[in-house]
Length: 561
Figure 1 (cartoon, rainbow, N blue to C red):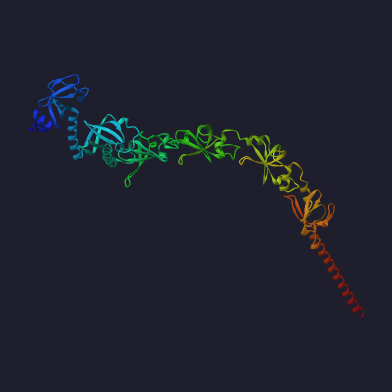
Figure 2 (cartoon, rainbow, N blue to C red; figure 1 turned 90 degrees about the horizontal axis):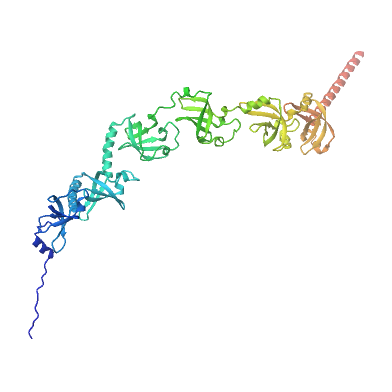
């Protein structure tokens, strides 16, 4: 059998190699070359790059404002052959990018800064156009401190530092923060060299705390304490400052050793405390605004930077125990009288109550000492009764001024809160704002008259009015007294109060007289002892007389003998 199978040799040739051979590539694929525009269409520019076929470039790659014409030479990137027909794909953008990469590599190796434009936002950062090459700007590298709004930084040309480049992957990482830190270090060194106390600088509020604000002076920070922001009271710096705000400040203290800088804003303004004593006269009344309330009083602003203190004791004539916050409120306008000015200590003492008539003086003018008043018992305490005299004024009846006859602790039990009573004004202290009243002063002090007739050692007769376990209660001419159990007799067996009953008359000796408290002391025991002593004396005297008579008789009998 004749084998008719014909073997066709396999032709395995590289199509791209054939094209290169056909069109004379000469190794320019993937490189930047100069080409000449030979034709323009509505969408493309046809460019001759010296190959057997021209290439085309979309017009948009030249930019919207590019003015092109036939014959112009342009640098293009030879990308690839488009198809088997040999059309060449050229790129103006890639050409610019290749040029940019070369320049960027040189800048990175030399440690030089490059200019770029932030044009977009991506996850974790932003995109930057470095003259055709696209770089990544991490969010942490955009500034020295966090920025809430970067809109003002976008679309403008500014310097960057290249941190890393990878041409294979097409990655470029840049930093704006490094540039700022270097600039800041340079500015800091320059500023420190020229800084001195009294210097006036412009700064930016970097951070705000409860005690002040940190001001960026351009490479170095200074502290602006809350007390140096303004002459007027500021409770928190955020009331007048905000982060990012530009402010003018003065260096009020500079420590070269630790480079700490203290700043002030109020020092750039006139001190309102100068000549304050001439402006605010003691005794004059002015209008002010309550700025702060404390437990001990309220601060009142007379003008920006000038505040005075109204002590709680100077707020009301009558509301002594009220908290200042119940008398005035913050931002309230009030009339105040200047009580004292101390310009050196920057203090002004003010009074609110002095701007109104003193109700204590007015009341005393109408009700002098000795007047009988009527009032309602507002409170009962361990030391007396408080009686309402007016809506604002109270008077006090001490326990000792309730009754002539009873001890105060017992006499107060006869009264109740809310009860209407009469009393006499017995003393007034306008300065201490006190009015002393008395109930017993409404009647004659019969006890005083009785006590005037008694003296220690008198023996009187008293009538029993009651008995208890420890004493016998008695009465003498309308004045009550008591004889203690131990004073009922010198004989212990007879010291039982139950041996007496009401109406019994007892003879006792006066042992003490207390006219101030309308009291006198009695003792049967002292009387018995005194009587016994007298009896002994009489007995002794009689025996002595008998002995003398016997001696005389004996002497006479001797003479007669």
